Image 1 (cartoon, rainbow, N blue to C red):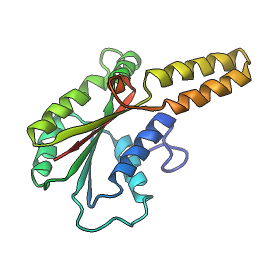
Image 2: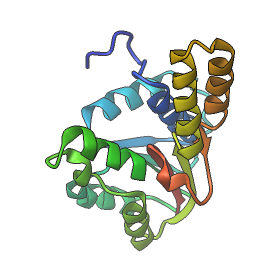
Image 3: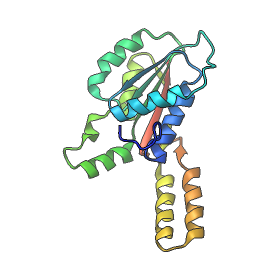
Image 4: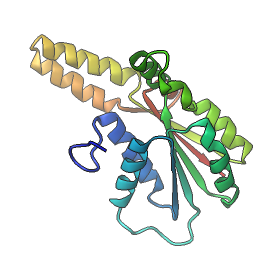
Length: 192
């Protein structure tokens, strides 16, 4: 991990995703973590360690699956079979825009195809008796639009507009609803 400050991801998108997963897992005991990428594993462990230890006893467990890959599903499915009713699964994966971005940056041999989409994960979890409850998109369409407008305004030295667009971008950082899957990152919440 080459992060300059421990527990600090390089961008606000990942920071928001890790915060959301940590908060959603805060009231659960115990927390199981599976990760298809070392970056996600390191940061999720760090974020979870910063939570205060005031979790109530006898709560159903939570499983966090970050950067899910197809080869991990058998191990995750085995662990999920032990989960009682009320258990929660949080899946942090790339949305449509995130997968497209990885393909564009990494080229045709990019690793975006190696990660499971939110729809595929939802189907797999449904087969294990989990019901998808909500989908949070981080870095959605409105966020990316306002972030680009802020960047262009800063280039043109329109500082007041750049500040306003940056504030609007942050207001639209997390989205739910129809277009959540179009985001850079997606957090899927499912419960048994």
